[in-house]
Length: 312
Image (cartoon, rainbow, N blue to C red; front, side, top):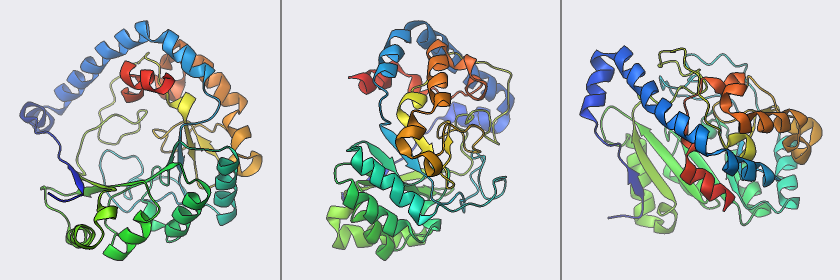
């Protein structure tokens, strides 16, 4: 066994059969399954979210999207390279530096994801950005999630030196690494086991059916379903687009909502933007009070266990 961790999806024969032969029935079953949890969590979790709101002085999870492009064709993603409707954008070095400087002054020790709805290694500056982030935020959990198609052994080493964690999602029909990733894995395990320990390889498929991403996932049938359970994202997550504007959350891949502007107002003012504060109050009542959130079936950040960890 090496130092790299591997994530292999569980085989679910019944689900796979339903997806292939009865996609409509699968969608109905998916929604019904989540609706049960949704109702239970909506009824029982209000007090915990009120506590979470009281503690939302700064984000615990920040995503910085330095370029808004991906080179993959994942059918579950509303911004895969075949369907992405966004105008191309690239964050300026000054904006990135200003964000990091303010996080440093904020003594930020939370999670900093140097990606959002994009492939981070499409930005050739990413290695410099990683180094800048680590130099200024020595105690932050700095992470990248990538499809790995652009990685070489040299690039992997350069990135991992100052990352806390890298997840490489290997999208393929079978559980076999792409040729370039075989070289990356071999090099890290043989020559840099210390860096290999920072890597998780996930075996994934571009045809996965996942959550509906606030109703925008291309491969999900849209049933007219409203969800009510509260979501922690508005209280803990800040997603910065290349132009400095702040999205609702990571599921707002198209930037349909804007909760402040980091480039114009700075990080703290953007985090305390009145629009976010209003949304936090609405979320305490339930996600059905917010248009973009009402049909979103990503309930992972509504689960009692996750919320309990956030307020402990």
